[in-house]
Image (cartoon, rainbow, N blue to C red):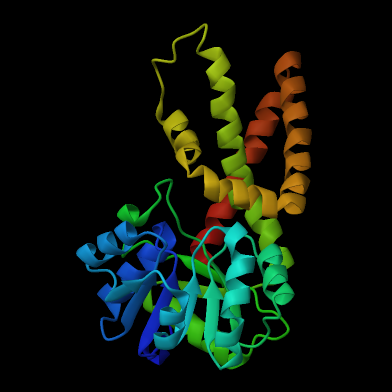
Length: 292
């Protein structure tokens, strides 16, 4: 890890929700010599962050952030990124460094390029989170032992990548690189589709519970539906802005769902074969997670 290489005097965090707040909390805990400045729309959010000791000071004004921060981390909903990149372009033109934490990369990179952002921008996505949201859910250990993905653009410099990599190392994450297109397809399969299915499943139960009180639920139900409690604004953006990749994996899932319906109806050897195949795939992925 390159955590010793991250030595900027101050970072600015634009957006103090779960991810932004957790970045602030982790930096204050793991490298207190770096000043942490938070930007939020609501004074109440800044007061909460200050009271929790996860920022050194806060502001509602972007110009105050750009005057003091050496690195700015954009941690807002995806729909706000285009406007933010436009506002940050002068900061970048003057040698500032900006990174984002959006769960969709192709659309956000397009927003940055549409705003004329080139040098000094490093797209990233920390693979960490919770069904909880807001500054109250900030967790200094959220990124410990996790992976952050960097999806460089043609303009991203090696020096910028090195700096942002060392930042994430300080927070406890290892860093890998891939293209934005690959990222969006992988995350559509491993994160965005599971969330979409959890939302859909819970909505299906709304109709079932009208006839059958759902008063008994096992661990599988709890595990599968936990993410259905995720924040709707954030996940509406993710599903919309990764539409193409999500539709592709939805097609694959729909195909398998038809096979499942046929297998259940036929009551033949197809059903245990499907379950066995799924078990093998899960075990293979577990090995990949352990060794990667």
